[in-house]
Amino acid sequence: MKRLATTIEAILYLKGKALSVSQLTEYTKCDRAEIEDALLELMDDYARRDSALEIVETENGYSLQLREAFREVMLDLVPPEMGVGAQRTLAAIALKQPILQSELVDWRGSGAYQHVKELMELGLVRRRKSPEARSYELRVTPKFHQYFQIESLPLLQ
Image (cartoon, rainbow, N blue to C red; front, side, top):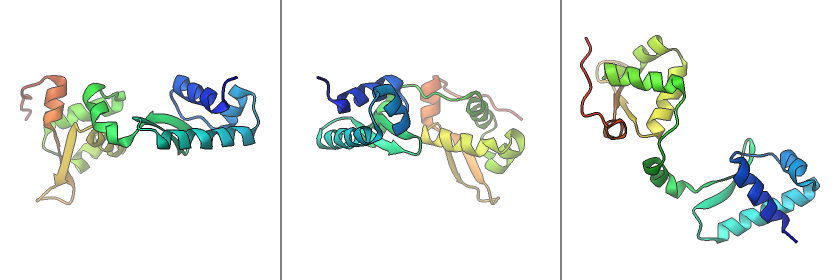
């Protein structure tokens, strides 16, 4: 007979997203206490393994994910997925660099703050305090050029 923890592991793997205890209860047809015990068992099991994966509790539920120590490996191997808004923000930074974050927000809207954060996490954009303004100056990184296989960008006036 399958262990409940192993079944939950398979469900988390197949779903590929965080699942609540209620959702796991629904998928396994087990009660809440059994699910919580199995999750603790599974989390303990992963904590003891020398594994690249881990089970973590997030605000959305429990998730099977890559350990933080392997984040750089993932970013080098898996192309980042960006929404259309983040792509447009990245294009604006690339074409108008250096651009002040305040100018970018005026141009792209307040969602640009989140886009910049996401692009920085992906290593495609860097920012530094502007010597002339109270805002940050944004530029693309060498990883941007490497990822998009672009030697240089056109200068816009």
